[in-house]
Image 1 (cartoon, rainbow, N blue to C red):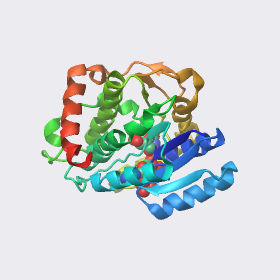
Image 2 (image 1 turned 45 degrees about the vertical axis):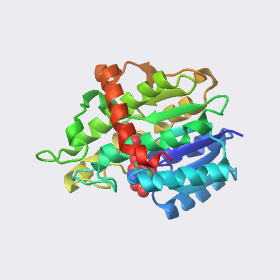
Image 3 (image 1 turned 60 degrees about the vertical axis):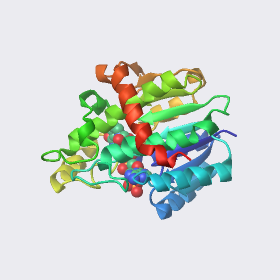
Amino acid sequence: MKTTIITGGSSGIGKYTALGLAQKGFRVIIASRNEKKNQDVAEALRKDSGTKHIYGMELNLASFRSIRAFAKSFAQRFGKLDVLVNNAGLYTSDFQLTEDGFEMQIGVNHFGHFLLTELLRNLLEQSNDPRLVVVSSISHLKGKIDFDSFRQKKGKYKGLQAYEQSKLANALFTLEHARRYPQIAANFLHPGTVRTPIANKHSKWWISLGWTLLKPFMISPEKGAQTSIFLASDPSLKGQSGGYYDDKQRKRNPAPLAKDKTLAKTLWAYSLKAVKPYLT
Ligand SMILES: NC(=O)c1ccc[n+]([C@@H]2O[C@H](COP(=O)([O-])OP(=O)(O)OC[C@H]3O[C@@H](n4cnc5c(N)ncnc54)[C@H](OP(=O)(O)O)[C@@H]3O)[C@@H](O)[C@H]2O)c1
């Protein structure tokens, strides 16, 4: 039985990715920050999928300490990993810091997943079809990397700009991962504009209202999960790495900046240095 971790599997796209992969016979670990929610969702999905192999485990991507504790306890409990789905993400209108002093969106969406992937790679490498699936966004096309903004507020905080930056970081990370570790099929995706609470959780009220009003025009979380499920499980993707896929599972051209190898290397070096104390 193949084993997959889905970060942010307790809500939205991640929840339906968990359901879809469980229905395909995967053992699924839902890894998110709210342990009660993880357990409730895992129980509901066990019922919906008719399989008992869905588990919840606590993982706070805004804390390097929590990420290391999760990786250790996952390795002890399950001892194998075939597919890592880096799906969790947040949007926030307000400047906040992670436990380790990073701006929240780059901290959770990029640095947290960077450390998680570093800690789990040795398990992935033991699989005969290892895959890394990264849920980025079409908004990576507008992203720019400003290293000075990673730890400090520069002028007025612009939530959308920080989100776009974090989604570009997802793209740069995936493509650099594909170059460094070609034995792991690493691909990233845009899930569509999906009816989830992402912009209702930490947004100014008018952004939250706007998002709610647009919901009837968005695709369902079940549909939004299809590209993640495809990249995680489709046999045609075995060994296929370094791709960017849209919500209809079509391969697309990423942003020119996402393909900038120098930028990717610099971001990788910065990230490695940032998480270094937590690698052992
Ligand atoms: N919805 C869209 O239209 C859209 C479009 C493009 C890309 N995306 C991407 O899709 C991914 C999933 O988003 P979604 O729309 O499904 O939103 P969502 O329903 O809010 O789900 C996000 C998940 O990430 C978890 N999460 C947030 N902060 C975390 C942390 N510090 N540690 C661990 N888990 C954390 C959330 O936990 P809680 O439930 O506790 O908050 C939740 O399980 C994100 O990466 C997002 O950027 C979404």
